[in-house]
Length: 240
Image (cartoon, rainbow, N blue to C red; front, side, top):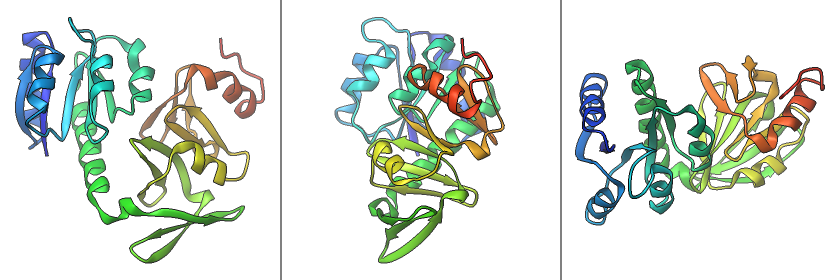
């Protein structure tokens, strides 16, 4: 896997470069101080992963992300926590707060590598063929796979696909999040943001902005927050 770094601060680029070398074996193709120069580079070069600062002159990281082709994987890097939800709405792989923790960076890179592998496999051509009140049938490589709803921890939208996170594995299929949510019956599955549906049976904890399932931090969208607190907490907790 290769990557590029986009950040208007030279010290931040140097720190990211050092951290990447320390925590991963991915190759750095280039470093850029602004989005337009990076976009010019990407016209003739393919980057598997983009480390992207948000608050930059000329074009912000969020604006730049909307210009990129869907195949590009993005990890946002910023000092401002308030951009977290918006970054996931743009289907970023992860969101890292500065100063960046090496372990969090390593985890984000591992996630990007996994998603690159998933997207490159033939299983990306898989489709949801049918469903019952208890499970889905997913067809991939001329075989049907039975996925029990009780095994699904959460479902994540990624580009033109969804990643189904089960207790044993991660499966990717060509379908949008709204469609697969409609196929899953039961009150335990809740849409909690533009990019996530969660199985409430697996929720470990939550606050006004995030839901935690095992080691995964899932954003809780403002549009979905009130419904989540009402349905999951029975209206006993205040979401304000």
